[in-house]
Length: 329
Ligand code: AHR
Picture (tube, helix red, strand yellow):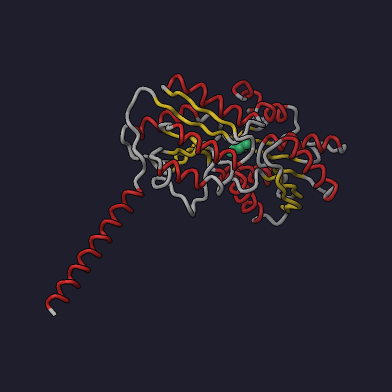
């Protein structure tokens, strides 16, 4: 009996040990990888694509920042493929970079790569786009998200459009890349705001993949199905320019009989505002290099980084487009 008691006690003790060891390793698993304070770092930047001015400006911002921040930059281009972007991150892990900056093309497919980088002891900073917040968390799975408030951008585009149309519009919405955080959030921000206005109707909403030509093609098709359209909301400037082309080809007058709202602040969009074809573009800055450098330095210094390093955005209309175009990309 005594022996039995001893065995039971020993079992209980070892179970407690296993549980506490598990707790320790779990707690450890939740720690972010540290980053040593150094003068030089090998830094990965895994771009999603380079098919529009915004992406090109973002990559250039990282390239321009690299020598100033002591980065030996490993930059890749996933050419609009989430699978290639995953492979690019995996290759950076294999190369043993010190840190990775990642704009995940879509919210879900990049998650495993983010977790693999963490497991390999490489801190990941999400820039411009985010991953599924229900699965991965800043401060646990990656250091932080540096970027704009996309919901607010959609909301501001809606507010402008409601005002410009007197609260009466039949809208075609051109969505960004399906499954990407800006497409999801810009849609939510806009749709929620116009839903409160009885005179604002969304006739159709379809993805143009954030690309000019795709935006033009989708607009051409939707225009045939909805010739009564009076407004367009495009999730980015490239698709807005594509929509302008489609409207003009169909003999419509963008800016007059069809009012257009968009997001980004590219040079072509500013020019379209000056030309009276685009009504508004809510800024979404691509210039993440300097902010990334500063945030990485803070992290290396041991500072606790906030989960969202928020970028604040301006709004461009006929009131300020001419004065702002010189700084556009
Ligand atoms: O993630 C930001 C969006 O991605 C920009 O609005 C768009 O132009 C880019 O492709």
